[in-house]
Length: 398
Image (cartoon, rainbow, N blue to C red; front, side, top):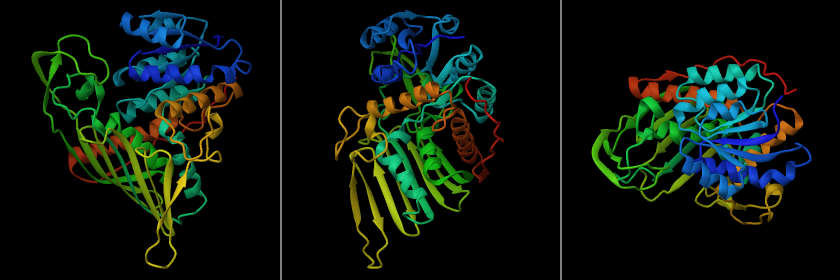
């Protein structure tokens, strides 16, 4: 039986988001999860592990994730490693009886995601995939609005994740630009979030009617030393090719009959790190952009031919507002705060002895199946059906 200490495996930029999330929730769960504490940060770089540990108040560091999973005091593990390591470490954590939350994407392929899902379905541990954007209060409110029929039956959806992080050709080459280690590029790295939001709002996707991939920066210089995240560093004189997509677009056909337009770009100059979407139904349209996170917009058909959009500001009545230190009323909600909501739900499931419902391993698998189909449609230049594995009855946490 594992204890209730927390470990983060992977001390890069996303590991810091997990650390913030745990730190923000320690007080809330001190009584409900006895002995919960921040114990170990693990990374192959001792320098990175030490920096993250000191910043967020972890007790110790490690360089071998296997030793972390062997620690009987560790009960909760965040997997914050490069994409190609997610499957191995998540499966090992489940086998060790740890509660585990894995960064997106769950796996490089749907086949590997299914293996992880099957492990999770027979485990007594809580397991989750990081889909933090579901927990933006405005996005969660829009989901409820659509479910309540406020815009009628969804007819079409436009879902985009546009980021500028790879637009600079002088950023160093890394695992992110290798299909063998990262899988698809923008499609998997950031498109995973857009695909999940499309499912979250409009239901399952049955078919990819078509897709187009492009690589705009075809090679990059290797760093002269160590690089972290998307940081600019000194470059060597050696170049390697980029063999996964910078931009991917696709046409989606939902089970409901709704159609969707999907775009993921990591070279979108001026867009920063932006998730945006609009969903049009038979009675209205709702739209949101993370560039203006303090509100969403809603238009209802009024018969005038000029149905205007109303601005719906964040308010204490929106989902997750009770988790904010200052309940918002038109106040923007930040990325780190939304991430803490994801960690809260993970810890809530552990405290209640229940499976993770919103951002489960199954959600990670379903996203992987759609991503596989988009990549196949781009590779084959033809429509591709989304193959969905049958779910297993996941066991409850003991």
